[in-house]
Amino acid sequence: MCDEDINPWAEPVSRRTVGLGALGVAAVALTAAEAQAQANVTEKDVVVKTPDGESEAAFFHPAGKGPWPGVLVWPDIGGLRPVFRDMGRRLAAQGYAVLVVNPFYRSAKQAETQKLNFGDPEGRKALMGYRAALIEGENPFEDAKAYVAFLDAQPQVNKKKPVGVQGYCMGGPLSFQTAGAVPGRIGAVASFHGGGLTTKDAASPHLLIPKTRASYLVAVAKNDDARDPESKEILKKAFAEAKRPATVEVYQGDHGWTVPGSQVYNQAEAERAWAELTRLYKKALG
Image 1 (cartoon, one colour):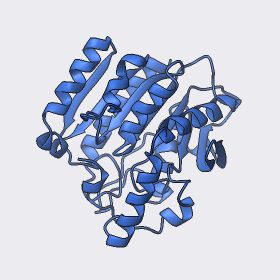
Image 2 (image 1 turned 180 degrees about the vertical axis):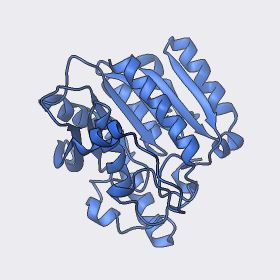
Image 3 (image 1 turned 45 degrees about the vertical axis):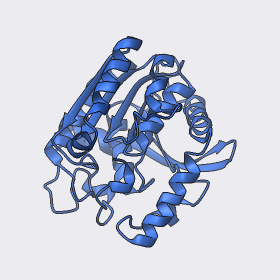
Image 4 (image 1 turned 135 degrees about the vertical axis):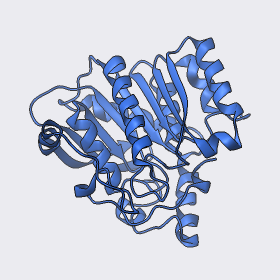
């Protein structure tokens, strides 16, 4: 399963509703320290030059000089929208310099993608077309190199520390490809309900694992696992053979469960996955 099977999200989640689901799920309770940390995050819209053009992105970092370890975030097929800005802000509050990208820059500006609803046939068709343009040939690898180079060029990023990369749905394989594109910089990879991680194609993302130096977190949706239970075993075997530290776990949430605004958003399981991400980054990024 991948984004063609995702449950469509409802209305976008605003920056003030981090942790809120589209169907009235209660907000994640923040401690006073967490709330203060998020209030002190600096955010700005940026443009990243790539071999194919210019990609819009949002850059977040804690207030102050830093530097902090860098993190690259690949959104799901809904692209760069408020809920992923919320994630960027939350990560930055934990001590990272975070770049959340518009993966569809070849096809549309983020303002255009935010008008599209995956639940609508025309919106779905457009977004799937954008995705197809992204994943052609070497595009993901070239984009990944450009995004990591952008992070390394920022004074807020600690270039002596490894970079983390995380992806949602279609962003899962893109995160694996990022680790394959710049193995010397990526220290941690996280995939949340990523689709197409193990395929029979010669370019399957899991075949990149031996070329990387990262630690991995692969959080699998329960309905993805039901459709392809062998995938997690292929991943575990690949990680073991490559001697890469990895956690591969099936969560009690359906495809899209970690993203507020998805109709299947599962707050409890999303927070559990976030806690695992936090542990991964603390250990792998320093």
